[in-house]
Image (cartoon, rainbow, N blue to C red):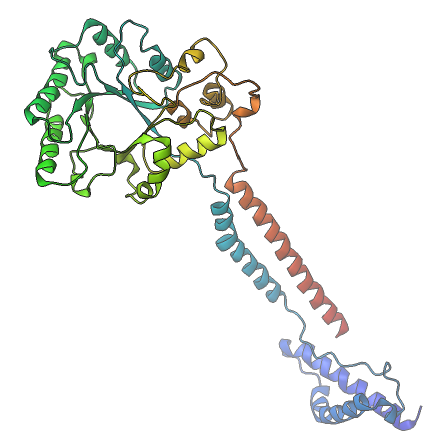
Length: 435
């Protein structure tokens, strides 16, 4: 090796050593004596290195002999800390809420069964299907429409059979009783309507357990006229001011469809905005969904529900309705659906296993107390079909809860953040070693 090459080699290493020593110690306030000399030699180093990089053989040196100076600033620990902090912020602010929202189970809201009991109790066992359902599901509220004879009837009090049956209903804390009164779309003589209200209120004079808790006004008008609005307001206020009504003196209007918004008033508690078949409901669903979100003020009453709906289909259907209306009634009957119990109820009374229509609610309640099954009692019970297995107890389409999914997502992104931080740390370490 020539003397010139040796000189260049020595000069290069000396300058590079001083440069590195200066960079490492300058942040501590320590400036080596060679720093000044290094500054004066850097220009020469650049020239020599440029020549070497362009054509190292001009200096008689091998390309692998003279190391390329690493001028990359080493990674600092605070860079790694900031990276981890940013990753955690992203996880907490974005990932977790998204996981909760996307995995949320679309369950229904708590419902209240609006049960039209237009069946005359010819004996003590006539209403047994209702008694049994009320007893079996004490956490579910029933609003039962009492209708002795398209109204309270011509007598001041109902018959002994009817009185006994109504008083038995009063023994259940989850039952509210409302008397049936027809308005004929606000064309019936208002005096007759008020007389019916007064008759129901008078039942309390005979027995407090016979008292009604409100009135169900059937055939309420839906098209607007000032006279009809005043008519409905008058009879509703008569209920609210009646001293013979128990509880909250509930007022229910049943136009059977979405009424004009001007019928809304403080004296009306619930409006039946749909009363028709299962098939008709699907054609009106968009209009019903577009209504105001005050579900506690609305009721749906459906008949002709197909009896071959799967568990998941029926559950999803009822859950959808419950998010828009608190008061629900469904039946598979296609005619006389208010004047008789579903014939399939008799099968459930004989200790037969309950089928998909009830989802075996009692057993399901004990096994899945956090899920509940308020919706199932709305529909009539039926015997188990052939081949019904224990899996019918499972919630159709059940998934892990949102917090489980959020936890999985959290650990996944934490692992990614840890991996990135490790890579940054490793890169910084290697850079320090090269220096």
